[in-house]
Image (cartoon, rainbow over all chains, first blue to last red; front, side, top):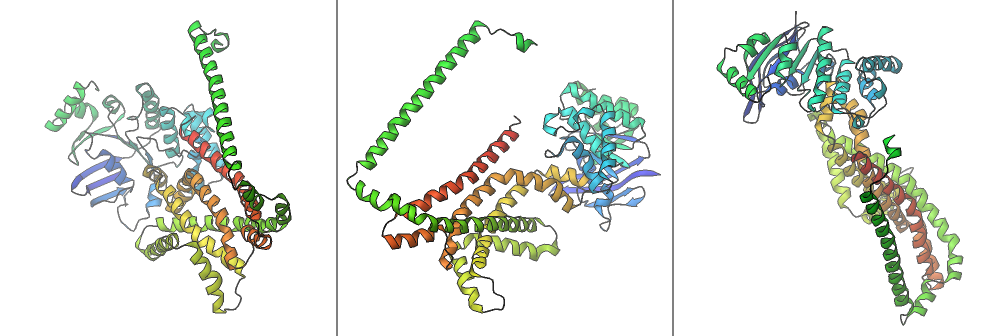
Length: 247
Length: 281
């Protein structure tokens, strides 16, 4: 069964239509990469799936349940979805460990000792074990983003949404975050990631979706969409990317 | 290792020596100008034609000694009132600020009441609130009417709660929406997000202005004496009326400043600490 199904999503901000009848399906253990120019609706799509934005039309189903129904409790839905943001959004007043254990303790009502043990395990796996008691402003961007991923993973989500998680990082720090995503894929995590890293999308994604004008214009395996695109808009976009030296 | 064995270059040695000379020079200049200004002030005041009269009626040590017990017992009332009213006003302000952030149509009346409260009590002069509560309310002759001191304290809490609510609200609104998005995306409810993510950051950010309002409250608690209770200023007024000498006022003023110093020092320390934290140093 599909983990995520989006049908005919529409989202407007004032006069500006950001999503215009978007369809998307994500199967179990699948990694879907969303590519497209800035303002093509990638981030808005992820925020809509996480119910951070209200839809203007369309249906979103998570594991077959219509989560766009206003009677659904959004807090209950968000527990099953992990989200990582471009600018990390760690809580600056909490230590790394407290950032990660906040949701397990407060949302899932798990005992503190158990939550901390799990958090330490996650941190050790990412090589951040000695940073458990550090505060976010003492970490590099790459370290902060890995903590943000650990924070999302501590909820044992069904689906991970990654919103341009490497865009704010210095080039030499991108690698450590990407290798974490690779590990997640190996663990079978279902993911939707908005990205500008075409090389990485080609390597890690099972499916690449090119968004333009608020729709998925072209979708398919990475070698087809990135290597031999059929739609003229996709070709145009990739040509600009190649000219900028990013593929 | 390099740090330990590094020998400064001649250029660096010259710079260090120059800076040291500059420091010595600044200290000397500051000391000289302070001494000059101080001397001038003292000469101007003591050399004034009426200085002897002023000294007799404002700075009489014997009268200060006689008035001290009464003024001190008045000051003790100020201190007790300050502690209770500051706690009450901080709590009330926080609650009002939180009520004003509630979303959803159900809460419209609550929001409207909270907004109406902050508008009214920030606009209303404290003295009028005091008169209404300490003179008007007892006039209702209700059963179990609290003493005038409690009613006066309530007037202070109501007035300062309005100011503090706005300070808290400014703090809450200064937290970037991305923090809320991150908290909500983890499944935290609105209330949990407020409690664990927004408020801890907001309160830290507005601690200096909050403490500043508490310093202001420290001076205003004495106004309850308008309704009868004798605070430090009122005690000084009584002593002045008995001796026809203003020294008790000066005494009360000095005591107020001494009382404020620790609070102001805490405020400065908190401000400095939050400024340091923001600059990441």
